[in-house]
Structures are given as C-alpha cells and as structure tokens.
Image 1 (cartoon, one colour):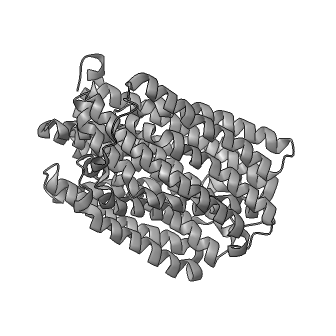
Image 2 (image 1 turned 90 degrees about the vertical axis):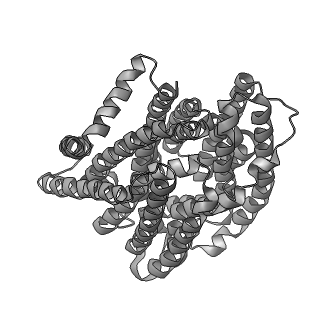
Image 3 (image 1 turned 180 degrees about the vertical axis):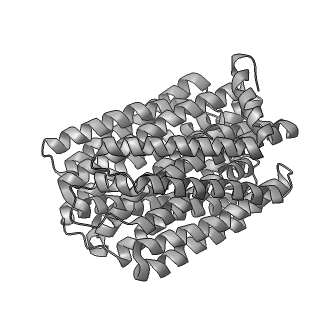
Length: 503
C-alpha cells in the first residue's frame, strides 16, 4: 500500500510540477510582453517581500507532518483531530498578522524600490498578490499538511493542476484584452482563494475529523527546532531577489526571475519523483522497519540522482538557446547570462541531490539535531548574498546560493547516513562524485552539441533538448548499471511489484 500511494503521489506531483513549469513560462511571457520587465520585476519583488511572513511559521509544517505519522499509522482519529486543530489555530493567528503586514508592504513598497508605476498600482498589486496566501492560512494549509502526511498529496496536486491551467488561460485572455496589471493579478487571486476552500471541504468529508477536538499544542512544541530548517529554506529561496532589488535594479530582478523559473521548474520536477517518500519513510520509522527503510532509501537516492543528472545536464546545455528564444522580443534588459545560468543551475542541482537525506532526517523528526546546520546555511545565504550582489550582481547571488547549499548538503548527508539509515559515510561522497561527475560529463557533451545548433524558435530548441536528453539519459543509465547494479535492480522490482501487493 505504501508503494502504491507513493507512486500515485509521484505521478500526480509530476503532472502538477510539469503543469506548473509550463504555466510558469506562459504567465511571465504574457506579463513581460504586456507590462515590461520593470513591472514583472516589481511583481516578483512584492511576492518575495510578502513571503517574509512565512518566517512566523517557525517550521510548523514539517513538525506537524512528523507528529501525524504515528497517529495516521494507528488510525487514531482523536489524536489526528487534536493535532490538526492545534495547527489550524496556529496558522490562523499567522493569517491575522499577515493582513497587517500586507498593508505595510502595500503602503511602503514604492518608497523602498525604484518602481515607477505609481503608488496606487503597487498598492493594488500587493493586495491582489496577497489574497491567495491569506486564504491558505485561514482555510487550506493545515489540510494540505494532513494529506501529505497520509501520502494523499495527489489530491492537492490534481486540484492545483486544474486551477493552474484555468488561471494561466485567464491571465493570457485578460492581457490580450488590454486589462491593466492590477486587474490581471486580482483575477488570478480568485483561483488561489478557491483552491484551499475546495481542499478543506474534501478533508472534512473524507477524514471525519472531530470538530470540537481539544487542540494538542504539545505536538507543535518542537516548532522552534524546526525554525532553523524553515529559515534556511526560506532564505535560500528568497534572499537573492531581496538583495538584488535593494542593491541592483528591478530589471535585474526580472532577469533573475526568468532563470529562477527554469531552476525552480527543474527542482520541482526532481522533487515530484520524491513526492510521498517522506511520509513513507515516516511510516517505516514509526513501525521500526529499519531494513525496509534502508532498501527504500537507497532506491530513492539513486532515482533522485539519475533524475538530477538528466534534468540539469540538459538544462545547462540548452538554457541559453531557450532564454534567447523566450526573450527574443524583450529589449529592456540583458537576459543572456551564461555564467549566472550555470552557477544557479549547479546550486539547484546540489539542492536536489540532498533531497533523499533531507527527507529521511525530517521523517525521523530530527529537527533539533540538525538545526545548527540550518542556521549556518541561512547565515551564509544572507551574508554572502548582500556582500556579493552589489559588486557582482546576478553572478554574486548565485555564488552565495551555491556555497550555502553545498555546506548544508554535506551536513544533511553525513548526519542522515550516520544516525538514521546507518550507512558508511564514504558512501555519501562516492554518490556525490557519481552524480556531479555525471552532470558535468553530460553537460560537456550537451554543450558541444548545442554549439552546432541554431535555435531561432521553439521547434529547433525542442529538437536540441530532445537530443541532449536522450544522450544524458543513456549515459546516466549506463553509469547506474556500472556502479549501482543492485539498487537499479531493486527499483525495477519495486515498479513490477505494483501489479501485486508490493511494499
């Protein structure tokens, strides 16, 4: 059952992330084409400023999932309801603070950036962008965590696929009709409000939660241990935009946002292959199934690495031709930045490489034991980003991200192997060498092929990407066959077992 749930979650998550990537390119192209790089940069900056409020979550999301694994395994509705109620109350308090914070950002945004669109436009944009997040805090975030912990994240994934597609279509139509940017963003917010309402109704109907359950606040007592993890994730995702907006220009933020769309898209695709895995690990740990945990961890580790090799080597080889086509009609900023692209993609590949170690550590609930490394990553991100953004711009923030991610990846990997899955530490460094050796080898071959192509449109780029993808996939599988034959065979058996009972 665990395997089937995990595969279903993977397929749904992959479809969701693919949809997110595709709509993620359609929407910026429409907004940049209609309103320019400065306004698109302003939208990205406002979004990042608003996301500061997530720091108040103090890592409650991960702590809640970890607390739910055991009562879900025991089908204890009373305990589940108590944890859900405590989490729900916590997020609604954050929602109230968020409303006040939104008003502050809306009022002061034009005074802390060089946005020339006017105070009324930035005020309206801020309110529109904030509406969806507000709805999440009040109506949907807690239920999403419950579904993730129960390996039913596919429900939220399907809902997100539908609303994302409708949202992208609506934005393109409104832009083509000549609507102003505030109207476009306000219309988009409607879909982000509807999504958590539907999700909440589904959970209440399917789980039979006890409405008047006494909130179990003790389940969230470890949230301060999760703060470091949450802080590191947040700063890794957002500090570059803030540093660039303060020390550079909004046009540079727009350039960063375009490349970050690509990096985040790839990250989401790799993560989609791991959807539901943390919950499965949590169930194995709760049931004290150490050998099952070890076997599944090794399989997951190899799948994650193979996906990263193929995805990031293909991206490194083809990103500049893609951006050239994607921004061919934009002339208000320089979007051709090969060194920045390589550094950003390499940092993102490092993040994806550490996903197996991250998942098993959080599934075990070892927040306190690993919070020190999280705080160090957060400090490195902030200090290096602000030191390097001024003199080196985009390349500077990419280096900051790379250094911080490398430190945390090693920290997570060694801790997970030593304390949870009980494997030799040299396995981590061998596996890292295999993964990044594969990425660099495939990238060199891909870049040589790319240099012989002339991409004047998406058709030529798709042809180039397909060729590089096939070559990278072949090299990755050959490497896995040479160095990870046993694990590769286990992965094959896992998929074949889906036709039977499998675990």
